[in-house]
Image (cartoon, rainbow, N blue to C red; front, side):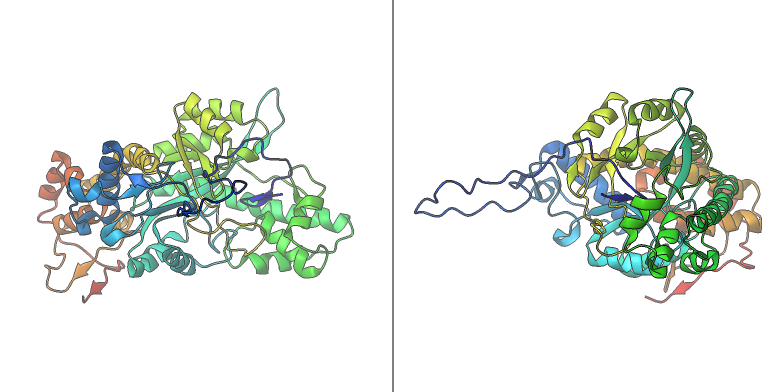
Length: 462
């Protein structure tokens, strides 16, 4: 029984996984002992396609810090049988993407800072923080990531409902991935998420009432304390309260007996339709990805409907390999094939470790090829609003997630042009920055002074 998001899966996994090849141990070993193959398959040099993909990925990951790698040295990096790079990055580092993780700002156990620290310890270079229905943990994650050289993808996992005339409603989670400066229309997305969070409070209270009727006198205050101040509670918080109160032995039992979809203490909130969430993600400059489709009762119909709404991809990879059935489903609808650990920091309970999902280099490149133009357009939209109206509120939109870094010895930010130059160097590659619209914005802001009232622009002395 596995747990996804805040729900345990109570049905078997219908898809088979691809596992690494290994030598049979039945045959006798020859006298001239051969070296055993290492776990993860044989290693081989990158193909020309993989080499180009690798260079594109590392350029984006390191941006202005990127050290150009010539063809001869890049081709010396190796991949395993499934195209997963084993030695990437500068100085032989791996470039590990973790695209699904949670912090205390939803139902995770770690603060964003501790999550980033753990990601660093596990070799993660790109981390998407995807808390349920909130972006509140992103600023802390970005600040912590600067200490470890990790790139943060601002994300969110949106709780929705899929409704069909022939099928009963079922919960569907949609992952949204944004550029370093966040959604192009942050306020619109935040209103949408706030409605869902309000519904999570009502839903959790209803679950507590149902448990009380089942002769389990759980207290709402106990659930709220576990969730923490300002955090919209989910099923996991209710389950943790049940364990602490002694009503069940563990989280698994809480879900299996009471909190599973349709269970005696299950309740719904005010989740929007899945199609609406996908459309809003697209509208606000994000990449929309279907989370853990193996948890769905009707993944084929849901995938088809969401593809029509603008869905970009779906999770296919897990720490135990690629799920063939969902890989085929993604191929059938022309969707990106992604994946992540869905890490919550519970410890034990069969949870996948942060950074444990190995995404092949070509898969990562496909992800960035689709995402980067979307993110570039969103960044352009945010900067254009400031260029058209250089107000403090529009400046706040730029600085919401990424603070301008001013290093000792460089020119201070004196005007809007300096700000855009600084931001673009952090967010976009040289080719992406060479854009006539960006040049026009900089020219427009060349004589506009920055009013830093209320805006934190820290000075770094390195």
